[in-house]
Image (cartoon, rainbow, N blue to C red; front, side, top):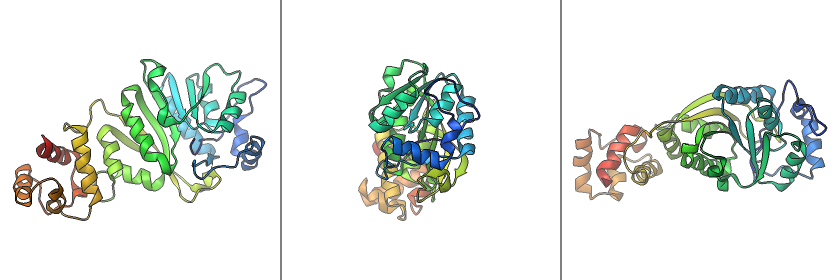
Length: 295
């Protein structure tokens, strides 16, 4: 479904269908494997395969640090990370939408008891079917569906202990710098529910085919309670409005919510300067504003 995470390993499992993971750090091997499966990487699906050993090692070390029992991998692709995760002894569920990759993965992992390949769009994947214990998520998210995937992870946060994710560098940087002048509404959404920890820069040359932009590997750890107390719909209505008109002063943006003569008194009551831009508000300030407007 996605820009699949593929890379290397220092060892491989035995078995007739099991190839050394290190093969897939070689671009020619990746090209050959894809051709054998009849696959031309799809730009629409964001299929770029990771062939960087160091990035793979960092992904695996992050999963090892978290010590999960079950890992859900978004878009396992050729199965390189899947293999390394399986070697850790964890249960691995690879969710892949491309039926050609699914066929290759099922052949590759036919004798591996702790790996299950699910042919499914991750946005429709049923976390509830995995039982009551929380799972860990690993994924390389294509730009086109980064926002809905992050929204899905947040929606399912009660079932997810955390995630290690690859996204476009610009997206990751905006999330990490939210809220703020260099942030985004998506970033505030993520930061409102979790702790964002950037791990490392990933150059575009770490992928095959080489994408147009660099990426960032980062970790998401969900908070036990959100950073806001207002109703979520109210809170994010304010966030979207302010970041949609980020260069305008608060008193101008809030005309969509209140008569002009009520705006300055309300903001002054909240201790917020009416001349500030919405992108400068902290999450507690956004929370107070949402509660005052809709509470």
